Image (cartoon, rainbow, N blue to C red; front, side, top):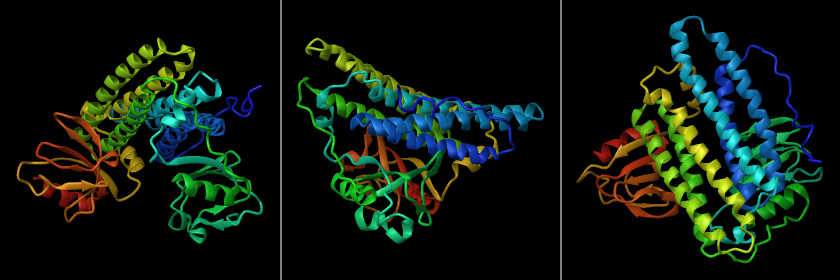
Length: 401
């Protein structure tokens, strides 16, 4: 019997007055966590993480219903309907991301088939995401994150906590860690292992690395990770396009979706070719499933920004929902002989007087470059996707023109 069966049975959801803004915020944060957990579950063959994905997916279904109820109650006239239609698209698209994450998790839970050597082919720089239950005698129990100072001391971030059926997304300095909490940690492998042992009182068991048996598997895994990163970036750009009513950001989300589509097509072709060279082709079924689900995520990003692309007025509740902090994402084009033309970018930081971080570059002749994967030199014609404060963004835009 599935250990999650029963606890994930559909629950009755009665209408109650809720803030649509708050529900949208929780849906957005939940979708981001779902993507993190689902890919980590597959890449590290972790059934516990996959189980948490299904719990979160069930939570997302409830949030979707509450958002739909709230939106229907808010419609009073045709103008309301026109403004709220794009909001329904956002709600539906966010749930599609959740469903795709659930499909990814089921690759592990249903043992669809993945090459044994997949973990060995992962890039060494990839951070680990682990799940641990807080022990009663843990030095972290009953203390706040500010008291522990976890990230500063260890480099490990606590990205979420589950307390029974309650999820604490984006825990802050004042969040108290309680005994029996299910904690989700992200950070470098060695540091995560130490924190896990301190948190749970148990020795962390690293995933077993298989031997490479399929030719060019490393390239295939790199492709999947690149597709994942591009899809997540597309979702970020889509939400930002809604916040700033920016057709430029919405167009970049659509450009990313086109790139992911092309990569998924090439990835499927590689998988079919590899099937001819392996003794058990069924072991590749999970890879095809993974590529397909990743493509669904990039499609959902375009659906989120559909209202912007169609030049529809976005209801203010959406902008309030996605405007979580002063940090924003911007799109600028490097003009010839501007202050950014020829500037080096190392670790995402451009060698100029600006605090903006470059997270991606679209270069006409090369396509998308994720700056976290490579140091580059900017050149005229580059489209930069950057993250920072509003004030820094204004300065950065002047440097580019």
